Image (cartoon, rainbow over all chains, first blue to last red; front, top):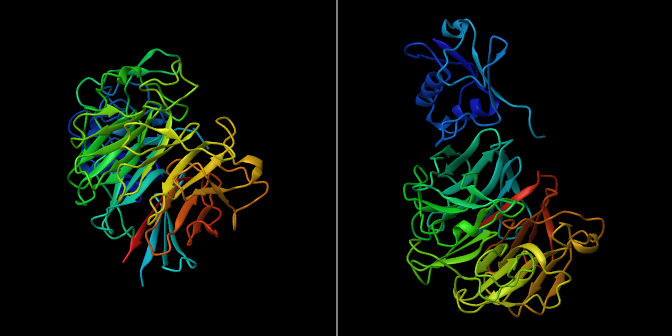
Amino acid sequence: MIRVVLPVHLRTLAQVGGEVQLDVAGTPTQRSVLDALEASYPQLRGTTRDHVTRRRRPFIRFFACERDLSNESPDTPLPEEVAKGDEPLLVVGAMAGG
Amino acid sequence: MSGVRVLVGTRKGAFVMTADGKRDQWDITGPHFGGWEIYHVKGSPADPDRLYASQSTGWFGQLIQRSDDGGKSWEPVGNEFAYEGVPGTHLWYDGTPHPWEFKRVWDLEPALDDPDTVYAGVEDAALFRSTDGGKSWQELSGLRTHPSASSWQLGAGGMCLHTVILDRANPGRMFIAISAAGAFRSDDAGKTWRPINHGLKSAQIPNPEAEVGHCVHRIAMHPDRPNKLFMQKHWDVMRSDDAGESWHEVSGNLPTDFGFPIDVHAHEPDTVFVVPIKSDSEHYPPDGKLRVYRSRTGGDDWQELTNGLPQRDCYVNVLRDAMAVDSLDSCGVYFGTTGGQVYCSSDSGDHWAAIARDLPSVLSVEVQTLA
């Protein structure tokens, strides 16, 4: 079970109150976790990744285990603590704007 | 008793304002989608309870929200706006080719006769259509693939398709406007397009009378006079009497002919409203006085309307999509400001009162006249 913490606006959009828990087959990666997230919550499609390029939106960050994973390849395995469900993957809106 | 529903999009959410026909007591709900930029909210002429809203932020991209109960509840619908084929390039600020990239939806225009059909004008400039209530969107690519498109250049606000006008009298005829490409018309429901900018003069482009490249800020049409169009251009207020085939200037005695919105009285097709703004770099009213100007003669002869509007120390702007009129017997006129005020006149502009004074910066104002 993968735990994902969404920023408040995406929690509102997905109508979830806290952490999201997802079943992800195989070794979890950014891509597979986001695929699972969007499959469970279709209204989140396009909000963390561009619809066409599938790239991370510029003002979205992915953190876990006190590390910034934003610039990792989307197919890099997530840290073992995330894979085991001990730590969440944090989807964060970057500090930008006012 | 009949009434109105005013749909306000702001930098930080949407607001829905309702009143009876007197338009002096308002019920305001919102912010809907708090924290998101709401570029436009508009209701279907075919079903007034069907609303569409364009919701976006720099963080999370574009969403489209739909309401089937007049704005009491909303559901997100489709948000994938994919250009058809290879998008090609337009000109960047420095004059170099730049790939077309979808940024946001500026304008949502529900079809006149079908609540499930809605058009979306987007940045980078293109026109999309949904026929399933916003669940999916298809580009009407004949516009973006017009032979002139590679020469279109964005304005300071981005290269946005901000105006979509559907012509009830001529099915299949549509008008759109793009900053800074100009106005275009289709006579085949959006399949093919041609520029309609003859008569426009823009000193800010190399050929002031070029076929494309003009920064058209807004176009307005009275549904009973579909051949008569009014335009607020970057500078100049213009009129066409032949469905855009040619334009002539009607700025007349305006204190400045720069501005953004323009709209036409619901019952008087020759009565038009503008809000003069000092200049292209000074986006506020001249002399700190917020004044709507009304012409009852199709332009040229303008009367300032100030009753109830601030006449000192006012330095707000009124954006291109932030003016609307209702169709009650005594025509109501509405506009919103970048300072968060929404003003209403229930007597064609003679007297004004604020519906709200402290909203986030207003991006758009629409009004529905309810039976």
